[in-house]
Length: 338
Image 1 (cartoon, rainbow, N blue to C red):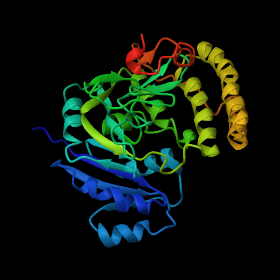
Image 2: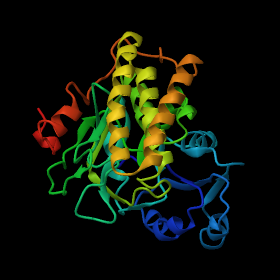
Image 3: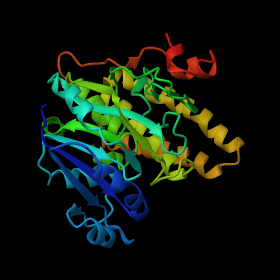
Image 4: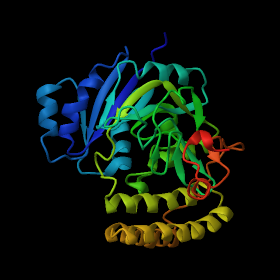
């Protein structure tokens, strides 16, 4: 059995309660060549004291301030030596044999750069989890969705998505990546701060011709919303802003210049929905996101990524509108898509 060195890296910010709850499952992982690391984004709670008292053998890498998910991981992983990195959220419960099946899959093909396990809900364990489910996809308008979760419809796991499958992007709550590829693409784009940075990472990797895979033989359970609640206006802002960053960075300029104004119009529907529900802060967050996108484009802060191979890998990009399929055609499950 091949056992390349794997580093699990948990990025923590004031997450003592999650470390207490979920770190024991990480330590029960059955894998022979493993290092467990906590990167700390300048926590102000008792996280570090807890780790020192209860897990003195855990390597802690401290950042001098809260750099967010993207820059925080970049700084921590620059100090880690392993064949594979696993970016693991602190609010994840893992199963004992969750690593080996993924590594075995990735070792079968040097073109597999990134992978994710099956991600189920910690709070509703029979169902998939919103952020990742059974692998992640994107439509031609750059709307992300998952096998097992389209918009707010989350499927029950009945074994329907147990098979391994090539996907478009892997969820950031439990993302496996070959360290050589991480270094080649310079990690996560720090302009994202948090949210959708893993989609950008996978898109850039696929633009180089690599594969992103889902491994159905590995299962984890994710709480979700552990750092930013789903209703958080800041999360709304990041999601809408960063989605436009994705388009500008990874789609050829002529098409991106068409898509961004179109997406602005579609975003207004979401703004009106928030307003109709009395969620004014979320509605204003979309407006703020648009303002910042316009400024970033004007300042050329976000540019088209020219590091693309002659044959970029677009497997996992759905060539129809998931918005139309879901809201107009009533397609609620991944298996119903054509």
